[in-house]
Image 1 (cartoon, rainbow, N blue to C red):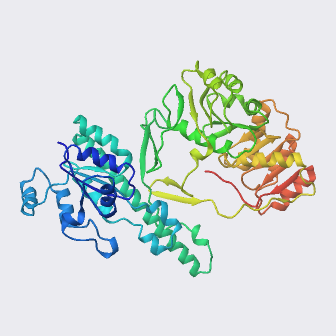
Image 2: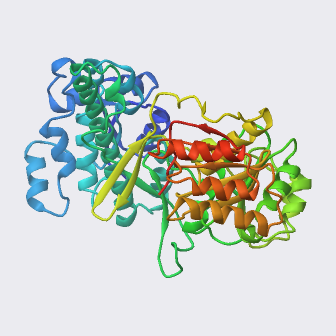
Image 3: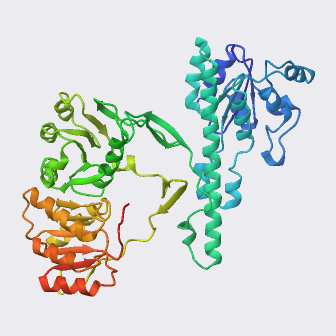
Length: 523
């Protein structure tokens, strides 16, 4: 493809527009532009033809109709290799448009803060039509949807690398952009509809939490992965379109895998729940070590003591910048990945000899979803859920004996950990350190027994330990097993038809118990 003879600009985001237009015009490109874009370029000294002069028609409906005109779309859609198309343009004295640069109205950024009539005016119609037309005709037209693309497009044109494959990739990106744009519009209108329905039922604010009638998600590939859950499965990392950002890795001895990223998210999300310096170790998406301490080195040592056997080959995350002393201790273990908000120079140096280690700069906000609705694909179905907006219920003591201040602090720590484990799950803690976890069990009492077994195997003394359960205890046998092991305080949701029996068993053993009023199942 030769240098563009005619280019059309219609820009809401005008960053870099002047330099891009000047570079094109400097090689002879005629610049067309819609309304505000034409004024912006002209003010910057760029020679520009307004679209209304090109078409012979002024804007209509207060600017709602600017570029929706045959004299705009025909020159974009005309197939250069089809004589009839080119004849049709020539008969109307129209030149082909070879490049289209459009940035859409910022609906995603503005709509949620506006009332519906104003939000509707943020829906771009003409811009989407231009992008789709140019992307459809990528064989002959370059389509640009983001100012960040300007340098790439110019470099390709100057080097003659604007190949059909490159134009197709730009078209693919443009279609992904319009898909994301339409998804945002559909989601916003569905939210407003749910709120109105809730208001009609007298449920103020309930519509915000009601599942939407439509949930459209556009994803873009961020990077390839070493493999999927198993080596024979190809895999890649995706992000919501428009939110993709490369993982900031200081060191990637081996390419990250699907399982690495699952575990990294689990570890970073859990460690971010704690205010003091903390360390979390995850293996197969389950916490096998977690601790808070005055210093990171102490937190790491306490987390490792939980279950050093399981921690072998695990993922380790910190909620503070990683210092050299902790890194040196960590380098003595075999771990797959290390994540922290920052890394001291001494920490990086300590990892230099770990040729296969992945070291990633990650904070909790880096793995936190931007959408409150979590999506899970199950065969042909999709399951959607979200956390409620209201605060969790206050904990309620239900036994004659109340937890001490130290036990309560340990219970709150254990509750955070068990909420991150797979159900049925039971966490044992001493102070702010996990000492045993039973997770993914098909019966609650098995979860208790596995947690006790793991704690004993690691050499922990369970006398005075606390226990957190992600679901209620259906029978009192759970209490019998926990109390026999040495547990003195328990936190659980409550709500079993046999709560009275469970409470009686706690009172009989002198165990303090509190109900949270809300369970934390994870399947």
